[in-house]
Amino acid sequence: PSGVLIIGAGQAGVQTAEALRSGGYAGPLTVLGEEPHPPYRRPPLSKAWLCGELQAAQLLMRAPEALARKGIDLRVGVRVQAIERAQRRLRLADGSTLPYAALVLATGASPRPLALPGAPALGVLSLRGLDDATALAARLADCQRQQQPLLVIGGGFIGLEVAASARKLGVEVTVLEAAPRLLGRVLAPALSDWYADLHRHHGVQVRLGAQLAALETGPDGQVRGAWLQDGSHCPGAAVLVGIGVQANDALAQAAGLDCERGVVVDACGRSSDPHIYAAGDCTARRLPDGTLLRLESVHNATEQAKSVAASILGQERPFVATPWFWSEQYDKKLQMAGLSAGADHWVLRGTMDAGAFSLYHFRGPRLLAVDSVNATREHLQARKLLDAGLSPTPEQAADPAFDLASLLA
Ligand code: FAD
Image 1 (tube, helix red, strand yellow):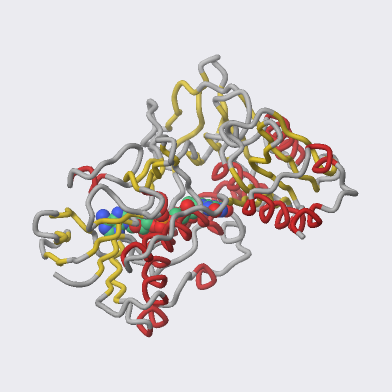
Image 2 (cartoon, rainbow, N blue to C red):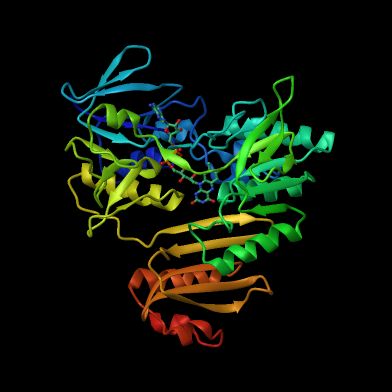
């Protein structure tokens, strides 16, 4: 067999195809996507698009014609059913097969379902794709018309971005978070508290340590609210479940590839089969110390895609870039560079009250990560420092008068 097949027409799949072409790959190149839509960007789905500030056409990542011009055969509405590794071919849902010389898994991730009595009620939604977002937008319009609240289950990025967008649309919102703070897995406690204040300031009811007991469903099958284990009740005419995602690695698992919370890949995007590569949200990357790193971000998908394309072209391009992520809520843009896990202290640059600041996370003298709110220029410099492996002293980082760019000179 010849040619490259890519499963998944999302961020990682499309980027891999383009990186292959720009890297000089001239053979057959096919991208198979299950969704009926041409490749689009997901981040605006919970932000500008949900608020009605962006048209559907503006979500488009690449026009199909632009891909066709590069000789990329995009096939949407196609579900891959199985990987037949021994024959090096894919089996599609319609029973047909497609051979490959190299296969790229870029299947993304799916929202974790809520395991709770009453959870399949009507009006209980999750948000991953454009169709989910369309359903959510319709529900928000109902909530607004009927003056009924939206319940958000999970105080992570998706839940909080939807909460902010719903408030912009004039919808009442309650956020239920089981942990004692918002965004607890990714942010320092001070920043979690700042986000809780931000949402409360915008009229969101934020309930922390909220242990759910059951969803309440009406006789019409529609969700009406949630019961908490402390006996309290929260009304809601729609529920957005944002409790994390799981990697779409079922195909890889069934084919016997090494999987652990995702398709296990090395820094070059290689799986345990020399003909199969993986990039994006479906992967778990093995780090030099043996631990696995799962990242769910556009930057990760893009960087892994470039590494995979290079690997297929016989080059080594390990993923060494500093991880980067952003989130927008109200008029606040958070940018996160590096990984703060393992940090033993942090310092603040700027003032949180002023709404523009950065947190510099250190382990000993070493800068590990920087989280910035509405401080884009400074964040870019911090990213460059991290990329270069340079660390300001904590005193320099905390002093807004100290020019961080001078360390890069
Ligand atoms: P996806 O973009 O999910 O693409 C995977 C594709 O594979 C899907 O279209 C899926 O249908 C298809 N597929 C799966 N299985 C099969 C199969 N068997 N056959 C055929 N096709 C298949 N990241 C940020 O960095 N910043 C943000 O602000 C941000 N906001 C986000 C907001 C929302 C609402 C969401 C949902 C995500 C957000 N993300 C954000 C995350 C970011 O969008 C993802 O990390 C990124 O899309 C991952 O790209 P991917 O290609 O791995 O997966």
